[in-house]
Length: 303
Length: 189
Image 1 (cartoon, rainbow over the protein chains, first blue to last red):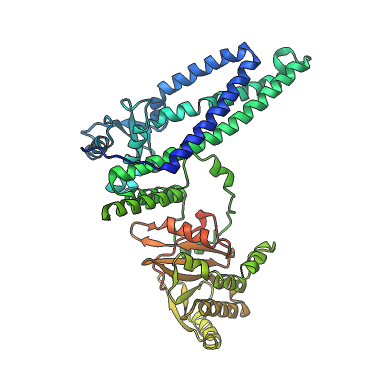
Image 2 (cartoon, chains in turn purple, orange):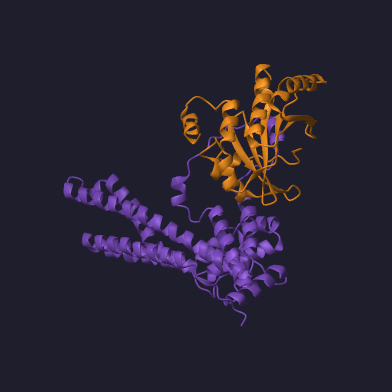
């Protein structure tokens, strides 16, 4: 049996469940509110479903195009294809297509609406920064995203968030133009105002929950990657390398910079709010969890 | 001491003085020990040379060292690195003695109006075989971490650096903005 059981992080599963439950409650409340406002809302909802559906169907092509990524053949990139073939076999999914983006920022992503129509993409920057084992760890992370159907999960989870934000801007313009020419009717004005407020609240809460869910899916993909490669440390060094490039930990020696005299003028910015809305967990937290998995794995082997 | 550290932080006026920072650092030892980070018994002051020229800086530094170091029972040494910066290294068995030694040498510089020449005070520690540096910059009054892994690959242990910073931020003024965490490779300490 070549497939590996990637085990479970019970705490993470519970958190995911609670997040989805809360999201469901918020969305149900929002739906109830929309329908209580009347038939117009139902039509708008159908319209939104169609738009999101089309976006979802073409999401992989749109993402690949926006990242300037091109699908590469086995002849062009035998090494990448070799790694992905092996990892997909272990993960038990059909081998996805592979694309390379010309972007120099190290990054990788998975696209596609199903496990059979998936693409993994890496940027030129990633290929330049990582060694083979780290590259394998990052690709494993993306392959677990495909196995976990994260594109579908996140599209569905964020659907009403998208609807709420669309309604929000709609109501905003409506209130600007005086409720469709019925500005003297104060009850219509109130109704637009309430709907606008409700949309903002739903949008904010759902964004928080969707971001949290996204972070849990990332931990989950990290865990899966650590287990199918059998080496959490490779992903740790990959993450460290990527983050030190992306977060711009300075490369220049202190003495060199000091000579230039351009020194210590950038103030630190508070990041509490940013963290709540982040789609990815902080690298440090991911590394801590991976180190825990490493310990668990070692414990498992010795006992 | 933690209480005092809190008082220091609340002062609105500029960065804390060199002496205050050294005092705060000596009270940060318990936190460093929680991380199992141990002092290497040495610290260094990085001194800028520009404008002095010739042998004058070395003579001046030497004068400072002779006047102040023996009284602190700390051994001191003078070196010049490949970047043309001078290093005063202070050796002391105990971390308290080390911070006191660095403080005294620093104060001596300040007294002679050479205070601006101090670019950094560097304290190396070990953590599970790795070297962990705490770099204090009097210019902005903050400590930054630096854990070198490989100079060739430009690789540092960022996760450990973050842990160090988070462990110390309540005790000493640390720089939280990573874009200010400048590396210093091949230090003589």
